[in-house]
Image (cartoon, rainbow, N blue to C red; front, side, top):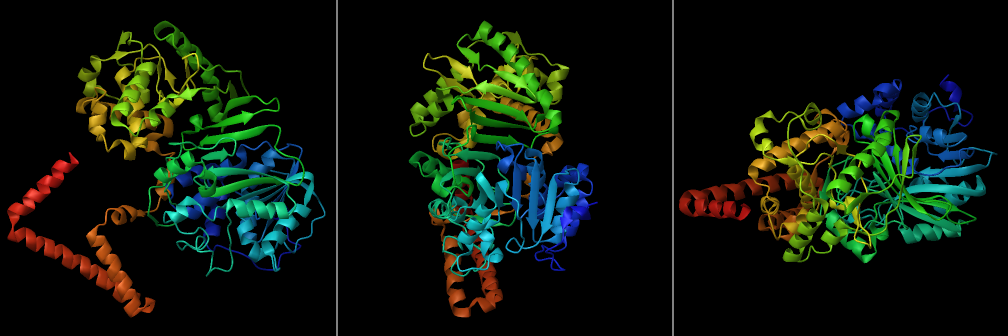
Length: 631
């Protein structure tokens, strides 16, 4: 049955491309799709994460495909997106070089009877059919390997265009040649070496990526008059957010940069701070790590335009949802929250009840806050109006450059959210223990705390917008509970999560402990609230946060930038040694270079020990000064 899905007309008798034995592991895994997620939770292999994770689908799950349309997927690989396309359109043709990968695709998508897999080189396969969509997801950069011509990239675009119906769309996902992560020390994705793309691929023959300006110029030259650029973050392979030119990130939006799953990497600069600057300067598009481009020869923007999408796939199944900002055909902007799994539909439908409870609570204790309306809630999706105004987050961010103004802005924002006095004494309930864990050891501390009758756990600054009439609108009431929860814990979450995301800016004024103490959070309360928050995170992400399985795959990130920035003498000394020895011995004696560096570090350590033994008083004073500095 699986073999029936493979068109072997152009198969050469052996795989034209293979990643080796790992493909046998992938094939074994997809023979029982019900166990794939558990395998990802327990595993740590990058090929498994890349080929099998549902996170891959985030790149185009949000896109409004024509359900009656047809799609040609060039370079379908192991079928990470083929199943999504089968659910989105009427007919999918997938072309792939590798038989083993095609077998994986056919096996994992056996339930889809609208999928045809063709095996062979794209340049050789002859297809008479025209399609509504043609995709080049992680393929265009390898055009040199597929197209035998003097200008393979332009010829790839023209050939892809030849398969489109009038008004059809070409969809490309590719790394940005000038992606920030490459400047910051990440290896070029295709070569595994630092700076290959930035240095114009001078020693690379088989792959090319492009800047936004160059890519757009090539598309126009190939006959694509309209080109919509989107920016998947952190990249197109495993994105959790999709930005567009109509909805770009702002200061503080990007806080999950500098993660690597495929190989160890260096960090030369703090990518989060760079993105803050780029967002303020209006140059984010030039430094986004990846592009997703939707191009057409005729026409312009789609009538229903998704401006932004965010995915929460690393939660327990019953809480996995996506959030989108959409401008409809009527020109009105709305926000949609959608269940990503059947189990999560109840969570979406529960939003109506949450809104009712929270609105009633606000009307009694804080009439200046209202909840954003729900326009529609059906088919596993809730629709909200888009609220115009100034978020409390932007107000606090705008004050970061001045200590006094910053502290005042935080206090003012906290006061606006928690303006009303708590109206009941806290008491322990079964519901509390289910969400926050058993906190019996802290009963004495908890017993003196006050609570609201209804609590919104996620009362962060970004979830409140102030309208022109000074009314504060609560945008998100996903986590609302009607059992007693200490108000001080809610305030802790509000200020702690802001501090943790903006630590680099705030630590020049306050340590974490000092900052939280400004809001009445002493050491005893902090320990309690951290335990409570860990309980809440496990409630959302599973026991021991198991559904955040990407943590298992994270590789080592070595921070070189701060050593260079701070002029660390020991570090600069080693770098000089390496440079000199490379020059004197050459790369063919790398073993001697490494040996010399290790011996240098050992001798430096021994020298420090000898100095400490000769003058123990001075050594102890130095240690004490360092200790005081950290306090």
